[in-house]
Structures are given as C-alpha cells and as structure tokens.
Amino acid sequence: MSGQDTQPLPPASPIVPPGNIAGQAMALVVAIMSFLACLTVGGVSLVGQSAATWQSQISREATVQIRPARDFDIETALAEAQAIAADYDGVRSARIIDREETLGLLEPWLGSGLGLDELPVPRLVVITIDETAPPDFAGMRAAITEAVPNATLDDHRAWVGRLVAMARTTTLAGLAVLALVMVALVMTVVFATRGALAGNHDVIEVLHFVGARAGFIARQFERRFLIIGLQGAAAGGLAAVAVFLVTGFWASRNLTSAETEQLSAFFGDFSMGAVAYVGVGLVVVLVGTLTMVTTRVTVLRVLYEIDEKRADPSL
Amino acid sequence: MLAQAQKAIRERCGLIRFDNVGLRYGLEPEVLSDVSFHIPAQSFQFLTGPSGAGKTSLLRLLFMSLRPTRGQITLFGKDVLSLDRHEMPMLRRRIGVVFQDFRLLSHMTIFENVALPLRVRGKEVASYRRDVSELLDWVGLGDKLNALPPVLSGGEKQRVAIARALIDQPEILLADEPTGNVDPPMARRLLRLFIELNRSGTAVVIATHDLGLMEQVDARRMILSNGHLDVFG
Picture (cartoon, rainbow over the protein chains, first blue to last red):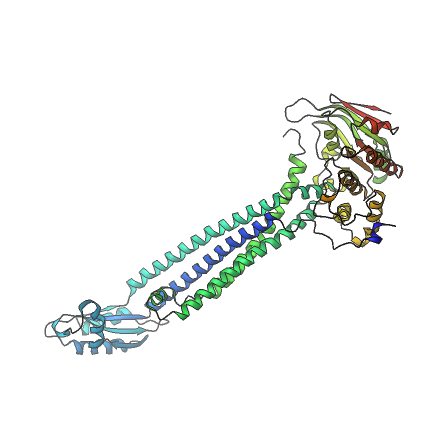
C-alpha cells in the first residue's frame, strides 16, 4: 500500500519560499521609497499647477497710474484714462480705484485719517483683460499718455516675466528632486530585490542541478518578487494618496485662517490634480516592472556564475 | 541516421568518457592528472581514494558543475567543452545526483522535494503522484510524505535525496558519500537500493571512502590517488 493512499497531500508549496525576513524588509523598503516618490510627484504637480495659476492671474490685469500735479484735476484724468482703456478690444472692464479704496490701500503704511489732497498720492485705474485676446498695449499706452501726460500704463509684463521665470525655476527644481528620488527608488528596488534573492541562492542551485531551464527558474522568482514589489509599491502609493486627500481636506476646512490664506495664495486649495494620481499609478507600475526585471537579471546572473565562473577552475 | 550515429558513439564511449583529463584550481598543482576512463551503460562502480584525493572534483566534472583544465569529457556522445549553456539542462535531466549535503529544499515537503525534477519539467501532480509515493515507499519513507526535511534524520534525508535523484529514471546516478551520514545498517540498506536500481538499468557511480561498503559488492573500483586514477574490474 503506498503512502499516497494513507496520506492526503496538502496543496503544492511554491518553489520559491513564500515569506521570509528578507522579503518583508524588501516590501517595507520599497513601500517607504514609493511613498516618498509619490509625495514628490504630488509636490511637483502642485507646484507646476500653482505656477500656471500665478501666471494667468497676474496677466489678467493691467494698471493705469496717474500721478498728481499742481493745478491738475486728477478725477477728470482718471475718468478720461478709464474711458480710453475701456474703448479698446480685449478689455473686459476698467475700474477706477476710488478715494476710499486708495485710502484703504495706504492705511497699513500711513495710518487712518489721511487727507488725500494733502499728499501727492498717485491714483489707479485697474483694467481687466481678456487673456485669450489681449488688447494692443502699445496703442493704449500711447493714447492714454497723449490724453493724460501724467499717466503711465503698467501691463504687468515685468511681473509676469519674473513670475514665469520663478515658476519655471520652481518646477525645474521640483523635477530635479523628482529625478533624484526616482533614481534612489530604482537603486533601492534593485538592491532590495538582490538582497532578498541572496537568501534564495540555494533554491536556484538545486533547481539548476535537477535540470530546470534558466527561463523556468527566472519565472518562479519573478512571480514571487513581483508580488512583494507590488505590495510595497501599492502600500506606499496608497499612503501618499491618503496624505493628498487629508491635506486637501484640512486646507478646505481651514481656508479662512490667515496662515492658510497665505499658503493658498501660493499653492491654491492644495487639491491634487489628476497628474498626481496618474503619477502614483506610474510609480507603482515602475516598481513592479523594476522588481521583475531585476529579479530576472539577478537569477540569470546567478545561473551564469554557476555555469561559467564557478565551473571555471582557473578562477 | 543521426540517432543511429549517436547510439554507435554511446556504445563505443559508454555514457561518459574521460580522455586525459587534467584539473587544477588557479595556479595550484593539478588535483587530477591524465584521468581516462569510461562509464558503460548499466554499470556499477565505486569511486574511492583518500580524503582530498579529488573524488568530489571528479564528480563535479561528471555533472558539469566544473570544467576540466585540459583533456576531453564526452557525455552521452557530446563533448562537454563545446556544449552550449542552454543544452546543459537537457543533459542534466539524464543524470541523477545525490549531494553529500543532500540539498533538500526545507520549505517543501518530502513528496514535493522528490517530485521537484518532474515539476520543473512541467508535469502535472496527477501524472506523477503515484510514482513519487511508490518511490518513497521503496526507500522506506512512505509514511512521511508531508514531513518537512528539517524534522528528518540524516539517513532519512539521504534517502529523500536518493529518491529525488531517481524519480525521473536517469541513465546514470552519481552519489557523493551517500552513506557518510548513516549508521552501518542504514548504509547496507542504501547499498541494496543502489544495487536494485542498477539492476533496473541505471548506471551507478558511488563516491565513498567506506571500505566496508565496497567489500559488500563485487563492482568496478575507480581509485584516485595523488591525482591519478586507476580502474579495477
């Protein structure tokens, strides 16, 4: 009577040992690096998004500044400049900053109870522009200066230029950080995979000597390590998504406080765009692919070493 | 035509043929010098010699885990030195190896360890379940199919390693000190297993320095001494 008749067989064990300390450590390291990479992706996307917003907001307005002078009727000059500006195509509105508003703007520096007539304070006309079809600024500037010699038109080009440069620099710095983090992620995945595989050299060797083909051995390890890599990457990615959601929720609940108003002036409402979530997905896919490729290359190299290096008595 | 030619070569050379094989590690003196022999099909031989004489090196040359420094090794009619790496697995499948340190996979049951060569060949459990169980019965471990290697004694591990080497009916079995870890009764029992296996058609090479074991069988003796091999019988 054979043993088979008396003992039922349990389900087949995987050829590669399932869980061990090296595998758990690898999953943890991959999870931490994936989390950091996903946060960086989110941060870079947020900065890029905010930089684009700053640029569009500031280029939406232009200002006419009229300096006071002796025997000069500034109110008439303001009305004249407003009328000239409003007449141009591409101008949505032209609004005079009235006396009260001007006092309000000066109050933080000069205090209240100020008499505007006693001080040579310039006055402003704010022009709102159609961004898609901006007006002819050169023509407008010439017309306003001709009608009101004390007026200057500021189309904010200098500011926009500086902001564009700052936004580009910030985005480039973010991309550089992202590149560094991705390189660190790649190196970490490669070394963690190789470290975890080092404990399985005996399995590779046994499979090799019982006649398994290199491709068969590599596939067994690829499957196992793909699961470990994906588990780590998914855990890191989900943690990063949780951070995105919690930050967005916190900002939306605290937008009224002074601190968050300042922050939101720079970073909007902290809500991540689709790019950040797609980035998280790509990080997970990248980690999975890297783990598989590293595993395959490492297993094939171990087999090469068994067949070529260890078999060569001269080495 | 090709098959007939290969058969003719095999009959002339045996399963394995060594011609003036020399082996040195690095710049050390040769551990094997001008070793020439052949192993005929269905033959039984002991490979013996003092410790450090090169038995394990010779066995490694036999299962292609080591390349000679000089000379020619022909395995199943093929020159080992001109073999492509990708051809090796198919040749290894025709050789059963029992390692001195067993090399069992500790996370797999006894059944799975023995079935491993069949599993790597892509066979389904249903097709080999009975064969593996019967082989484990034959080596006296039929009641331990689901045990894991760490709980087995040295002799039991040795028998599992032998069963794994035999499960795909190799043309030749190489065993490195198969009785080194067992008591004399178990050694005699393992020897009977090898003799029975040989009667069923498999060539057997047993590397041992156990004189008592060799005296129990009238078989060829390949004696290694100072790197030279003498074959008796």
